[in-house]
Length: 171
Image 1 (cartoon, rainbow, N blue to C red):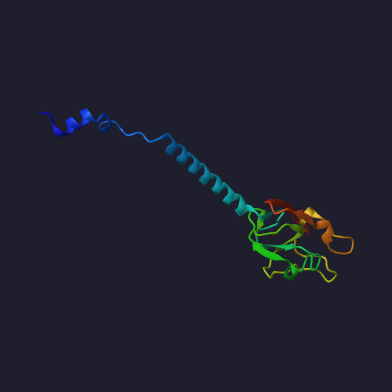
Image 2: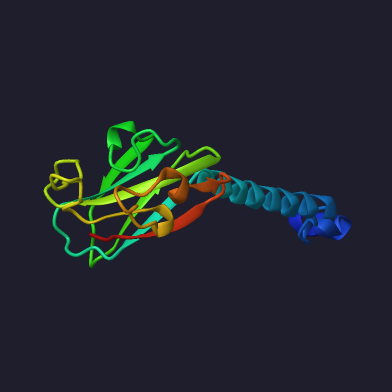
């Protein structure tokens, strides 16, 4: 007499062999994994949309803070941060700093940067308007003969894709 389990394996060979899954289940699993990876990549790209990075160099010391202002119009550019679309402050390290603006819509912009060494949120100037603190603007535009750089000269087109601009401070 055969043991009960042995009899079943004789008459049902698949009982002792692993069951094979149909090919379509493997294809479905691979496709689902690919779609998930694609969605993650799209989410990463969407996260970076609207990101404008400003790399600042020629910072003389790490005292105070670096102020970056993003302007979409001429009004207040470059020194009136309260008239900017967005202003942020960051710390510098080893003569460099980075300001990152997020959620920036496509358009025309100009960036103004200052080394706010006394942390008062304003660019210090002399009686005649000459800056006493280090500053810079997008496109590294120098000052006009009798005044600050013009918005038009410092402006640039922003498409909405991640972009990095470089600003070198001057006195």
